[in-house]
Length: 117
Image 1 (tube, rainbow, N blue to C red):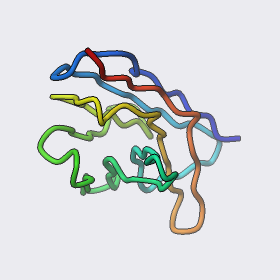
Image 2 (cartoon, rainbow, N blue to C red; image 1 turned 60 degrees about the horizontal axis):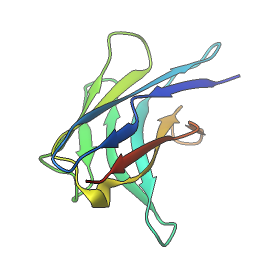
Image 3 (cartoon, one colour; image 1 turned 45 degrees about the horizontal axis):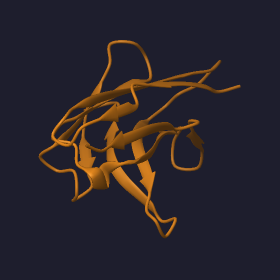
C-alpha cells in the first residue's frame, strides 16, 4: 500500500511564499519521478513542477518558471516545492504525483494553496 504525506499548503498574500512537501512510502516501492500538479478551471491537469529522482532532472510549467523550485529531500521518495512570489492565479489544490516506472502512477490527496489579499 502506498502512502502519501503532503504538507505545507495554506493562505498567503500576493508576493508571499510557501513550501510544499511530499513524502511517499510503501513496501517494495521504487519511485522514479515525482512532481506537483494542479487542475485548471477546465479540469485540465497542469504540470507545476516535476523531477526525476535520479539525476535530479527537473521540468516546470511555463506559468511558474523562475518562481517555483522543486527539490529532492534527503529522505527517500521526498520532494519539496518552494513557491515564491505567489499570485492569486496560483490558488488551487496542489497534488503530488509519484511515478513507479512508466506504467504506474500514484496521487496524493492534495493540499490547498490560497493566495489573496
